[in-house]
Picture 1: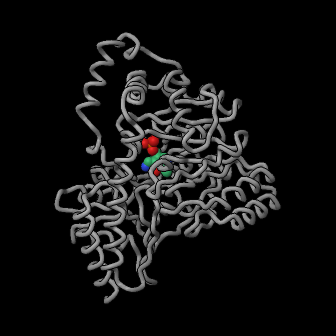
Picture 2 (picture 1 turned 135 degrees about the vertical axis):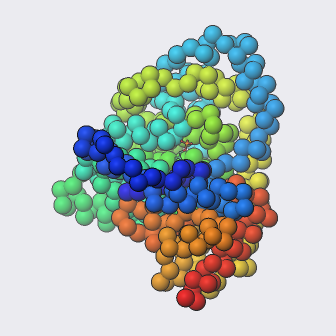
Length: 418
Ligand code: PMP
């Protein structure tokens, strides 16, 4: 599975150097390959290019001076603790605060079941390390988060996609896939799902399907890994109930402060049933000994002293305005035959090109016209997504978004004529 940057940051083009160590790598390292579109992202980060590619939160909207004071105060008051090693499970006070955040999604959790991780990306790595042997099966929506697919690939998992539509994962598709695998004697290690404001599909699992999916997984004894970094970024004023809220024993819930505060702190978490939590803590200790005490205490201090719910509302309003700019521009400018999802929160629109077009072929032409996106193929483990593009609206200003869509529509139109 080619791994692509989810954030569209500048990455040096791959050179053609011969790798002298190629015969010494572990078999799993063969699953770690750079994407062919990475070089294009280096170009896409030039200021004249409108990047609809990156998934970077707009941290400029934070009160940066306040964050600066808070960090300075932390060192002055609690330096000897903040600069010391911490526990493998994470700071106890922060774990309590994380439980309070999760309460907004209907989760009643004990802080003892929370493991603080280096972003939810590390939680994904730990959970995969704990459960997956080469060849083991993971179910995931098709498309799915590129960073998760990269991790699954690094541990040599076999990913089987479950179909989705505008209401999220399709329960019948899940039930059929589970039935077929079980009939063939294949064990499923877990179902990986992003129920809210999906990356990259931009859709949200509806309430009825949540119950159906929980029932299907309970009946078939399939563990669910619920990845929910965008859950509090809904534009319609409601927060969906987490799958974990109704099934504490069958769901590992992953959360993150990357989108509600800042990804630079690299603070995420896993909430897991006791036995799995114990394994995750051991895996965490073997990976990094302990998370950075400093950033954990900084996030804790932020949550204690700052109006964080208000800040999330500010983010929601900002992203909502950008979503509207993108949907309006797509409606006004995209050629007939293109379609796209209409996200009710989060960062991403998932667009589908007319029959016969290939998003990967289109990308260099789009970059030449100073607009970038992420081609859909990287979000599938099975070769799907050729006609898809992920368009993100989280970072550029609304006017830039409209200009980016205008350029993109022009490139597609040209492509349709050739
Ligand atoms: N899961 C999903 C669905 C994501 O979109 C991201 C970030 N792009 C992550 C996990 C990882 O986020 P972080 O490690 O910053 O918490």
